[in-house]
Length: 291
Image 1 (tube, rainbow, N blue to C red):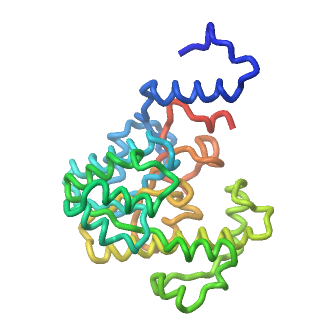
Image 2: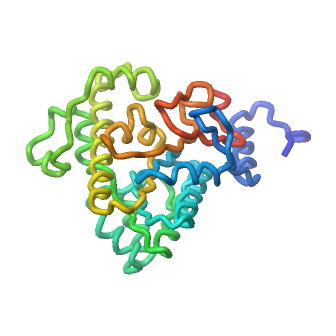
Image 3: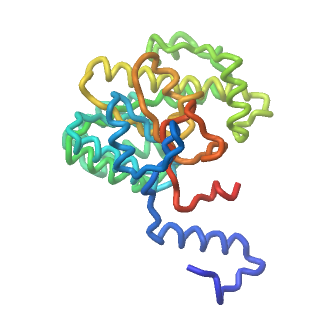
């Protein structure tokens, strides 16, 4: 859609909103990805074939990007079509909601009841963005696994640091989760995520909270794999958590994984490496191209 005949003079915000709306409804879709190993562009089907050989597949997202959720569902459907036994691990749910997730996948919970569970867990992102994934999991009885740490613990650490956790707090976390954060990790966050408040007094606390979430999610992925070794878990998480360096994959130990990422702030086709991901989704249009 062109802008000929439309006068946006003096109304830059309105012009941007109209542009964004036109993009959302123009039918743009992600059909290709950059294979980082050899810098070759492949179609989504080829990408799915290549990631389906490991027990854990991360598919990162920008939380409010509908096209990223469509790719996540394509990966889930593609792996199931290949005969894989699947689970869907989700950053969007805390461990305390696991029984509700089990009830949903088994068909024992109404949609309205499940929406309430979702909204309690992930209140700032609309339900409809994940609705197709939830529906597919229910229709095919695919387990959804809650990965995230308790929000009260994460909030406390982000404000007061990891040293503020009491013994009672630690009992809410997997027992093997290490709460130490290295200077190497702090340096990585400083360099990779300029928007994470690196100049603020509580920068270290924010990093500690981020790493705590990474390690709790990694622990829950490992636990599920130990009990379901024939399953493939598709992990749905924000791009920063799904990224290998500084993310959840780096905390998995020897458990094999593959990663699919969209462009995220600080990470695009020019800057990405094999330390970050196996595949980078190629978006037909991205505001990040303008940053």
